Image (cartoon, rainbow over all chains, first blue to last red; front, side, top):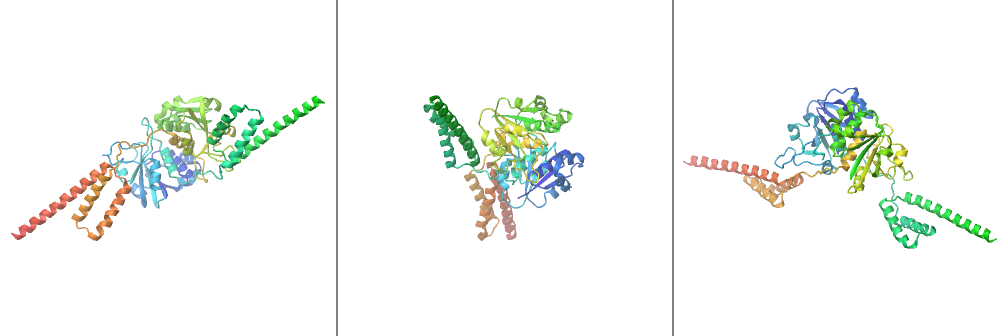
Length: 246
Length: 246
């Protein structure tokens, strides 16, 4: 899926710069500007390390030109329809629905974003195959242009979020840890009638924490060190005792 | 779940204004600023209709003060850990994982966002219960501060996205539509051996479109009008024929 970001008549060049930045953040590059305001140094400043995206942005004279070759045209709106009788903004999709709808398909998905003040015109929304609405507060639903772009690109982004090399501890690993905790409780003379309950609590706490194999290893290292020190104290006690006995 | 947004030493007051706006967009209000830059008119301009959130933002002298009474402290980072040996940024959560982790819980969830250039200091990240990382391109992973806030608040927002009154058409409704389409194909003399296949195609197209009850009703209205017009043509033909016979 190729995503094209189309800003229709953006009036504030800082917004254009901010959009260029977020386009690059999510690994996209196809930015089109329909009759934009002049792009000044402020826009480049806001674009930060996305100068290249801003420089490569295609400036076009009409929405028709911008959506050429698109397989799907998506219109973003800050006002959703409220009646099924109104076809212009109803049914509308959430950003997540949109992802489900278009992911894995071939072709260009064009995302149309309207003017900062008036959004997309009705005749522009009519051209769209799908209408997307970001669920916002009824008290203040109009988002900053670049924020709306950020949220849609976040949803549509193909950047993998799976942590690298994150291996959760196996049940065997964790059982060894729990046995270890039990031994330590015994070593410190923890009250017998409380032991079972406390061990269950420790299981629950560590269960919720979803320990990695590495974390179990380090925790057991800490417990071993505790045991070793307890042993030293014990030996000393024995020594002190035997000295006393001498 | 109450969400508190904490900006640690933000250096650009326009970013503070942009954050105030998105805080209000997603129905939140608890904004804390730790040692922020002076908030000028530009910040209020960018905040747009979220002047109230910006004015009510609590300015504090330390992270400790800002996170007081929090049940969960979440640190946002633009760099995730790459080895399980590093505990500072590993394991890390995606914004969606974070939502799953905290939703439905009681208490204040504090979201910590660091400086625009250097992010959160290690000693600040250490204080966090959870680390969240927005999956971004390896080519340019550092997001604008207000964009990062926007994406986390979008995920954590409790604003309902269910379209109002959107009733999908029932199977009976749709069957009537398909029967109607079949009749029209017959009326226009569509080739018999193609009819079955085309009707299946129409079922597939309309199936994918997930029609509402209202849309089925309007489509059937269109078909009735087509039939009525076809009937008129037929009657005229009969009239023309009978006139010829006179």
